[in-house]
Structures are given as C-alpha cells and as structure tokens.
Length: 217
Length: 152
Image (tube, rainbow over all chains, first blue to last red; front, side, top):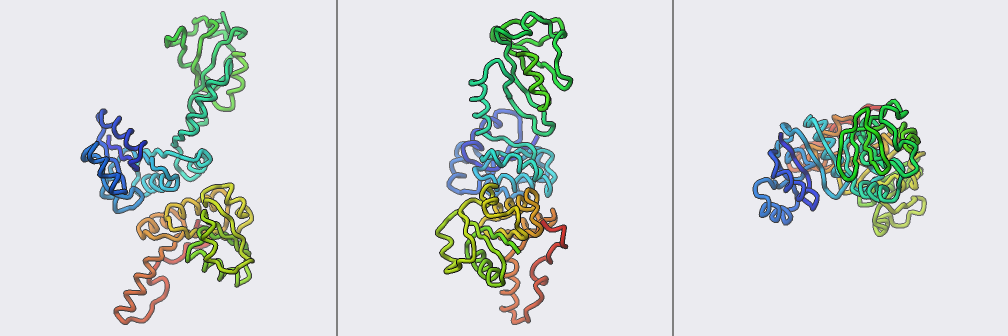
C-alpha cells in the first residue's frame, strides 16, 4: 500500500515515523527546504521536496498510484486542495484531511472531503468524556453514515444492572460491540448479565443516541 | 450588484475601486487591516477584517445577499477554498478565483470552478510584445469563461 503524507510539520513527522515501522510504502512531502533538511536527516529518503498542492510535484511524487493521501499541514485551505486534487484529478481511492478549525469540518464534507480529523474536536470529546457520567459519551463519529461509537456506563441507579443483554430494549439502529468489566474487555453475549460499573461500547445512529441513553439511565 | 472581494492587494483594491465607481455595492475582506490603505479614499467600499475561509467573516461581509464573489488573495488555495464556500455554502451566483498556478487553475476549471490564471495572460502578452505581434483576443491567452450556471 502506497501512502503519501503532505505536510512535514509535527503531525506529519510523527505520523511518518509511526508508519515507517509498518509495512507501508511511504512518502512525506514538504515544501520548505529548511524543514525538509531536518526531515531527511531523521527519516531519510521518505522525505520528499515539493508543494503537495502543485500538480507537477504531485505527479512526480506518484499521486497517480497512491492508495491513500493524508494532508496534515497547518493550513486548512492547503489540506482541502491537496485532498480535492488527489481525489478528483488523480483518482486516489482514499483521502484524509487534518482540519485545524473545527468549523471547517462540515465544509470539507460538503466540498467532497468526507474523512477529516480535528484535534480540537478530539480533545473536546475527551474532556466531555471526563465530565459526563452515566450518560452516552461519543468516542468517534463515523462521518459518512452519521453513525457514532459511544461509551455507556452502568451507574449505581441504572435500571439495567442485573439484566441480561437480550432483555434490553435497545434502539433498532444500535449494536453493543464490547464491554469493559474491572478494566477487562469482553465480548458480551445475549445472556451476559450487566452489573453496576460495567462500561459498554456501542455503535449507534446519531438520531438514536438519546434513546440508547434512556435505556441505561 | 452586491460584490464581495477577498484580498485587498493590488488586484483586489483596483477591482474594488473600478466596480465601486461603476456604481456597485462593494465589500472587501482582508485579514490585515493595513491592506485597506491601498484603497485610498474610497468611503463607499465596505471594509471587513478577517479570514476569507471563516464563515462568520463571510457572513459579516454580507455574503448571504451577494451576487458576485471574487477571490484575489496571494494564496491559490485560499482563493479556491473561499470560492467553493461562496458557491456551495452560500449559493453566490457568480464566483471566480484568481490563480497563479496554471495547472491547478486548469484542474479546478475541469471540476467546474471558474478560475482566472493571470500569469498566463501576462506571459502571452509579453510573448506578443517581444515577437512584435498584434495583441490577440483574451481567449488566445487564457481559457474562456465557464458557461453561466456551470461556473462555481
């Protein structure tokens, strides 16, 4: 699998380092010569000079045969253009953009770049997780289908404690995928009996989230 | 017409002046307030400080009622992104992105976005001047405008 990362800042650098240890064919594009010198000394030939939004450089970097393009520069407009040109001009099957301003996430989606990562949003979600208790906590949003992965905690007053999973009145478009008990992950079965302090991870359609929360209240 | 211009550099400030003098309602956006000095004394033009890819800034500039959006910052990608926001998010009827990179301008033109690649125009005119040729038609230098309704 050929992965091209555009933007050799902190995110691009550490991401490349991680991926180099896997079995990926990898290229990291950076347009700034000074930064490139550092990247080449650390990563070797993986670091490649060029503007990842300029067609000639993209051609030279092999965008035509790339399986995945990841745009992680610090500028949203650059990340958008890299992904759009990769997708529409070079027919790259999978593009992923870092979005710096969370407000841009829906815009990227509207403009054809559905897969985005936003660190502000991730940290916000983590904070939300530490604040809310006994409620449904979003872990990750799967953007294409409005489906979320959520965490549900069985509180001391929860009416599901002591009940079997197949006795729960779960919303139609939801599925429990794993259960954490005493810090151990288990795959819950229909006859698993829930206990106080269990944590369940479920996938659920966004619109059904409140209904799911009500089941565990 | 209500016209929004993004980028108060040379192209933006001169376009603002021309369209304002032609009697249109012009608002110009730039993230650097100093840039508005280029306008000179032009009280009819509304100035908005901020980023052209920020929806709130665009709303403050009145994009919801705009007929035309022109992006002429010195960043091709900013121009391309803001133009797409104007078209897709706010439904502005006529939008154009000035571009420096001819190949990127061509790629987006093929995707249905109206781009105007000014270096191509300058290069063609310079060639004709050096070779002592008559000036050609504008479309001898750059691609023609996209048909109405198709251009983003």
